Amino acid sequence: MESVTRRRFLWMLAGAAGLSGWAFWRLPSEDPADVAVASTTTSTTPATSTVTTVPVTTTITIPPVVLEVIERSGWGARAATAEYRTHVIERTTIHHTAVALTDNRAAPARLRGHQAYHQEQGWPDVAYHFSIDREGNVYEARPYTAPGDTFTNYDPAGHFLPVLEGDYTEQQPTEAQVESLVRLLSWAASEFGVATETIGGHRDYAATTCPGDSVYALVADGSIRQRVDDRIESGGVEMVVLRGDAALARVAGIEA
Ligand SMILES: [Zn+2]
Image (cartoon, rainbow, N blue to C red; front, side):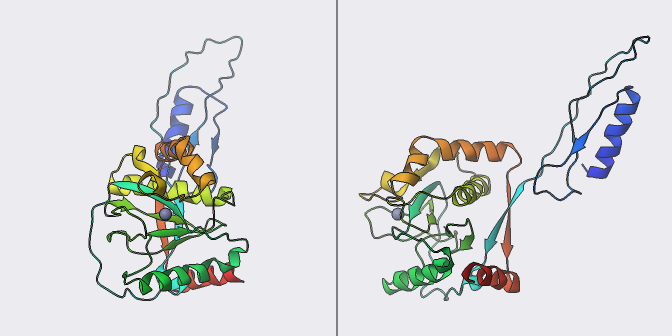
């Protein structure tokens, strides 16, 4: 529903019901034009009159939160060195890069390095679909329409592959990083129609410590899955890809 119309509608309802004390607020980080949410109503009843309280039921559509993603050219990705295969995503498997990152300005260079190293293996591209740095910046990596690659003994076809930059045996993920992961996984669950029960870590499929103890703990205790479920229930996620100059400017800001 168009928000102004809805707001007017709600005010009309409030007026019709003889209610006062209606309040509207905006959820954080939303365009003011996007939403108006009715609070619970407080009826100030004059002692001398009889007021019939009319229950007002409205369906509120909460808009999605935005997940900004830096397109490949923004971080200086090379072209793929071979043709991609295709696959159908059926589950999510979280990874880390297993190299501690203490200065996040190095994150885009790290990603360029992973891509170069992975292409040296004869792989068409960096092994993962999206990379998330310590500040929660999200980078497009291999197109998710193509299966990933791995040094370990499992078949990554069918797996959606986010990677957290850093070593999560040594480090703790930042809240910004976890929040971006939650948004990315929420987007993926809706985009690919896969159940959040399929969210796992690399170590669930192969002999590896990946994605590190501190990140895997959030998988094992169900807290990431719960946050994803909550996010989907409260409006979901809209992915916005930063392109061209916007992507370059974002990366320049990260590297500065
Ligand atoms: Zn891994």
